[in-house]
Length: 70
Image (cartoon, rainbow, N blue to C red):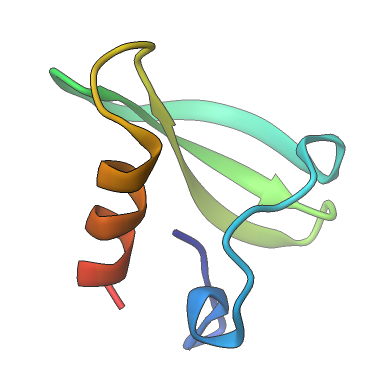
């Protein structure tokens, strides 16, 4: 999920960004299901990028988790 200047893009119906618009900078944390990294979107906006380990959760489970954060 991406929060941009106090506006949650998920509330605008934007659930996924183009990978080529994001630059990954450093790892913020990791766990059983994946890794969270600090990144820049369009070279300007700080974002947190959650990358799920393959096979750790389904796409539906991921979107349910994202919806609980909105």
